[in-house]
Image (cartoon, rainbow, N blue to C red):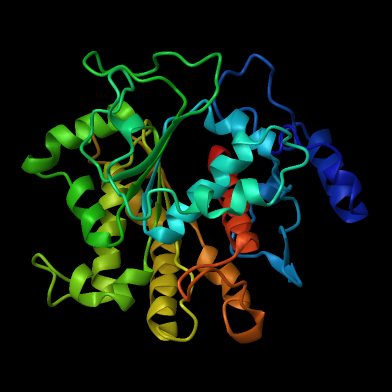
Length: 359
């Protein structure tokens, strides 16, 4: 994501000196070769500031967020260049659906240097499928490459002249430009569909052949709709129990060919403040301890990696300062946020995807 962002090192003398020092040492801050065909090569350079940054450390001026030092603000064109080379599945609740719609609107804008508000914030953009989950006809068209039975709300093929068959699976061929959303409001749905059990073997095989990036965004239902989320054998579990189960599941399901990003939840005003902070703190603790646990697991993993291919976008910590009383970036109900909050999440997502490329 930094590769196409020019001039950032001129914004601060201290950062400029550091970046020049890195370039002089020929190990950080270097531009990737133009021959690099990796889908992520267009969005990141090796950069010490980016690698050491945290997506929770965004600052605020009014409702305008500011990235941590060394992290650029990513543009709609960069987003399109990146995602059109990947096969992406968002799974989550209505907050994920609304972010998905805004992100697609940014990439679909006619003028990506002047994206108007309605094209990324209108109800027709962010609430598509709200009352008609699973019935987007594009998701079931022959030849679409979508062979999964999922509660899709929307499916798109992003423009990509270079879209081609990239799967090594000989039974399912996939093009690199799918951008889809499925409605999963509770952790238990992700635990069920992403688990390595006999019933889900065929589903997981098809999932990994269909997508290479899964973005998970849910959490509010876990505290606001407990009877729904703590069901089907999970009746006696706590929210942290269910969170830990889903995090362990995505850690085990990820692979070099399947990257999974997990987003912490925002807040529904003051209704479930402590419960949502409990999710955020437990998520951060899990990822803080991930290196040791994933290295141990990798010794037994069939793909022989040294770490799990999962990342945390800590949207909850960053948006907490704009979640309450007169400071809230309000949406159409107490669970939802306005446009600036969704743009923050999209920026954090690109930030973590670029950072993951440097690991």
